[in-house]
Length: 111
Image (tube, rainbow, N blue to C red):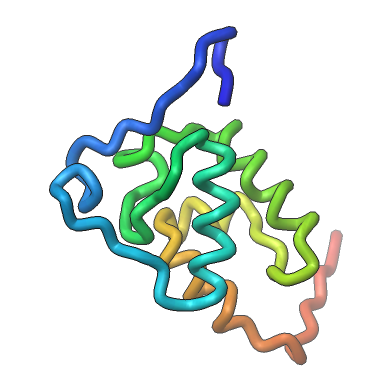
């Protein structure tokens, strides 16, 4: 990943991974999200309980790329930036997007 022409490295200070407590994915959704995020961050693995912003050092642009890449995956539901901020870990986000009822219809009324 590049920022201002310099390679960025995920800052794992304070995360479970930094403490030697790597939390591996336990569901298919966690695994898929984890793979995409690790690829975007340019790291081998990401602990599913590491906070995107506080532990991993991601910013809104990085997470926008993450959301865009998730939307391109047929095996994952789309993820919005609002969901990323509301559920800022792989584990939390995976739970949130798999708990969505696909039969729910959303109505948007513009005034």
